[in-house]
Image 1 (spheres, rainbow, N blue to C red):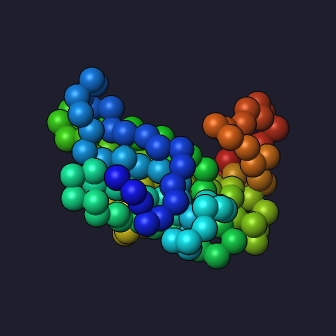
Image 2: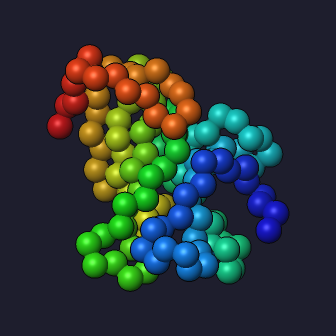
Image 3: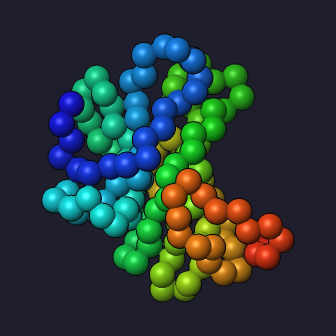
Length: 134
């Protein structure tokens, strides 16, 4: 299915392994006519084509989302998306936690780090170098 908005790093809800997926989550560009940089998170409904997205703000850049199912979940969008977002203005990043069913409402919570980790694909291990502000 062709997409009007570029997206990368897709993931699906892991509630029903080996079953067809209706929803795909990914990092996306803010402008529909570009493919970089990723400044938002998008949920695509593969049955209807509907897109729901959230953009944390100017100069904020998203990494790939990770889906975590709610305990006892039966639906593939019943859970949270964990997304590390780099805020270029404050030069730090934070773990944004989204309700996968309500991306457009923004994050439910944000845990900011004291400074930024290097931007890279699929995460970066930094050991005890960086603390977290809760």
